[in-house]
Image (tube, rainbow, N blue to C red):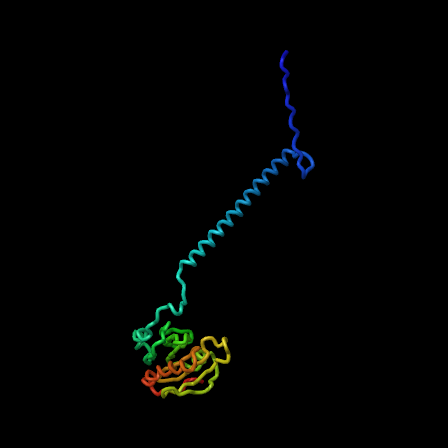
Length: 228
């Protein structure tokens, strides 16, 4: 008796639930292509996320390892007397150099030439013991417009005499933060110089700054109030 040959019955195509029938070859190919595209898109998004995480981590490390501090307090003090000494002789008057008590420091000093207003000026930026700002500007052959710019175009509030020097007073303190760095200013003239002391300090520190300029101003001539 010869063995019977078994024949396998082809398995019918699976019914796709969304279609309610088997897929056609074209639909199968399209589905696989879409799945591949979706996989690639997910990989791209994942790579972007990983890159972003790595970037944030790198920035965090840099922030942690880079030393930080107050730039004003950590900046080296400027020797304004030495800067003035190098620039002396280039202007019609000697550059005024204040002699201030301990606790005062300078963060800037420069002779400004070829300015847009046509007035050469010697500038010193100071930090007071109370952490306030005082600027000293000496304009050479300055005009009224230059003075007005230095005092933020404020009207004269009166005059003060400090250590034998008469100063015009400009008081912007009532303006609050809008006064900027010119909350208060003193202006006088001597020789061919107009000297402006301005800043955010209180009366006592302004008096100290003005007094430190008394001798240099008298050496230029008889100081007179210089505002208009």
